[in-house]
Image 1 (cartoon, rainbow, N blue to C red):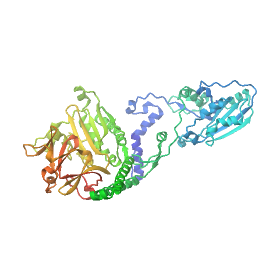
Image 2: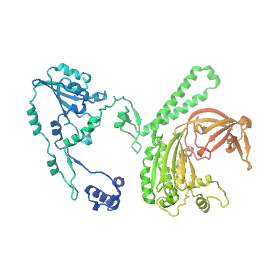
Image 3: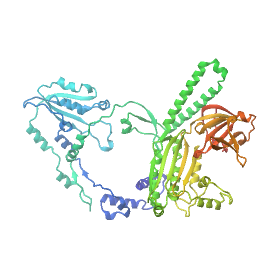
Image 4: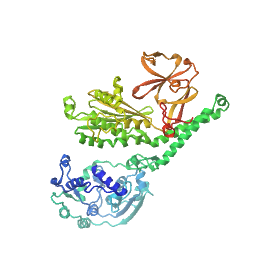
Length: 636
């Protein structure tokens, strides 16, 4: 991994025209030299940590074609149940040359079955022609490089009966059937002896052996093939299912905006095409405009028009369904598994383990949970800071863990799951939890909290997100730089998400990111406050209640609360909150009960509820300015 970084640094230096320090990467090169030479004296101490039970074996394929030609393919090895019929000593023979095309395999045909069928006509000798197999770098997994030459001895076989064996693959192969004479067994044996490959002893003499290292055993291709026969015999021949042509646009996570169809995709009948990400973004934007237009048309339909133009109403309903289907399809193209971000974290944990001297293990859950690409791109920095925080502040040293009766090694668990219209990503550790006394002390020293101000445990936990806040005693490259959890909060808020912290003293801490599934199109409830329309995300709404039926109470401080099934919820009157007057009587207004981050509920009072619809949310901060209490704007 370190060598990979060094190569990247050299490439960047060449591109930017800069110079790297003299001897950059020399230590890693020294370690590689130790590995390749096999001399332990050249290696550094770090090399001794590796405990790999592996002995290199040199394999030569010199003369491989001759050896293959010398050893006819024995069908009985693959099928013990097959018994060739007895043969007369004096019979004619046929030479059959069989070269399959890729279509033959795509249609689930198996050459082995054809050769077995041929063997029922008489005595067969099969030689595989593999002289067209390219170098490994040029090898195409689904290319066809093997052909067969079959010698058939039979008293009864005719050209017609032989051709009948191959009639199901006609057009999908090159086939020639010729009558010939059978060479004697002695001739075959002499020719085989002449064409035999060099012996293992000769191959060992010509093999190069590194100085100071023991000569690795050299196997000839025939010996290697012989050792693999039991495994080949046990393996049943499996052919890929026929490919069904389909096309899906997809994208590669790490910078590359396209994806090549791999063997796994082809086995599953999936094919991919390369699509530039900008093109997909343009489609997403057009779908957003389509959603807006469909909403505008729906809003223009009052009761009079609905009664008069029923066919038009039905057409608009179909348009709404089609728009929703198109939106879902486009979103699925942009969706990517969070694995693309999670896969970077094991290395981070390894580096933190080395720097802190602690034993830390990372567990990942729900790596295949899919989320919009634009959100995934914003996740790397927050997750990095959260894991650093868990490793440095959360997980205790080995001595402290043992003294507390815990396992020597700490565990950081990184998980992702879908919950309604949100994705929940949690970073949880089994460390000592947040030291609330220390957090409160530092907060008071820095003026974040007043000297007499009293805070609940939850409020103290949230202080770790204050800008520039850190409880680290010493500044290191892990913590204490004043850059950390505030970056997490700001980055997550930018994409419409939230962060919630829950800590248990002596047991650990869990930080949860609640993120929207997509930033493009949102299902919302349209409400009216003082004559103006507002939208509330549908995924946040628990229920709606008429104010006349709601059970309101007041706290000793004068704040209003709503009692819902034994639970008291804070009430926010949006008309008062946004300093707008409303003439609607209180009993005729509505309460929209919403669930905020961490399961905290809030009751919003609105004048009227118009209904559900889909909207395209745009950032007000980017296009105008930040307004407290408003997440974004939309066109209805």
